[in-house]
Length: 149
Image (tube, rainbow, N blue to C red; front, top):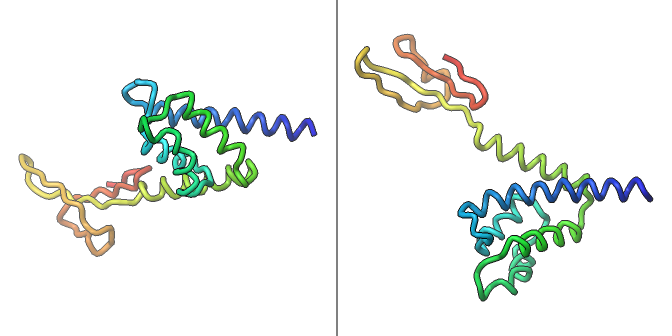
């Protein structure tokens, strides 16, 4: 089916873009290689459905040097993507759900209390509850995406 082939090629290109972004983040020193630990982390960041035992087996040839080259990194990720036991649509749904979870974990609201005089102000994180608020102090609700004073 031509349409399915085009869809798969588009998915592979999109996945390659994500692999490139992860590679750029991991190879911070621009040395052309990453550690085995960074490669293991990449499986999680790319949300590939691979078990730890499988990852250990995949990385076995690289154990002696302790590092994976850029070409090896891309080859591993592409191979695992093609052999994934889920469809691209399922992969995207899982990836989006995990991305939402990651953002939600970072996006916890904080209530900040500002107290003091004109010359000296203290900032304190207080429990994010209406019970923490009083009329004599200034509060800032940091909702990650928006601020309320």
